[in-house]
Image (tube, rainbow, N blue to C red; front, side, top):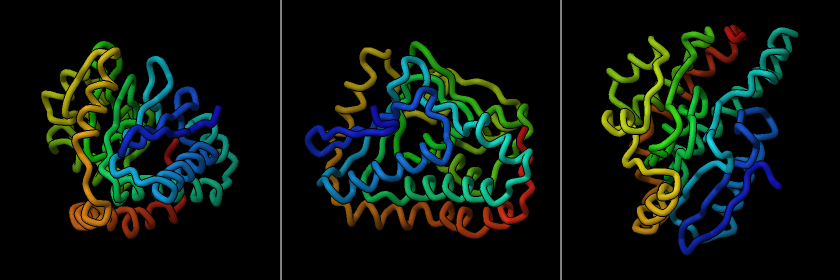
Length: 238
């Protein structure tokens, strides 16, 4: 089974992450980008839904078992390449010319939660799973581009509370803070997400231009501000 795959349902492309906890490492990021390429180039889809095949995890973010040894060995070029690849995915999602919807069917932690913030809309499973940024306890500071992504998806007071405390939010709490649009039990999540997605069939050119203008600050943070941090090689991880 491919680590990332998609199926087409009318004008909705459903991308499924099939890589266990869907942790970010070079192979996973490459597979994700290639799947986005295929959807954009080989289909007429106008809406993208992303979910996970794991029974209780959407994504647990950066693959620390991969990146920590790289950093400890001082393989800084490999570390820099990884973070540039990760940023390319974040930037791709906020400029992708399809309306994007995350069907968060389990835990979304750290980078997995950040990735979900890059989507235009989020639906979340109500009967299992937390939304959490544990970086404060892991000793990992957020890059400016990541902060810009969080501010896109949630109110600033909640960004501050989650970053400073590392607290875990339930789906209901996420909905109360307008982080997710709707919650549903697992057996209804995809049906509700797909009903919403199928109600959106907008022209790619218009959607792409809207995103270009709405998310210009995120793109700037990724392309300009993050570069200074990445090039410094000061990776405070592990």
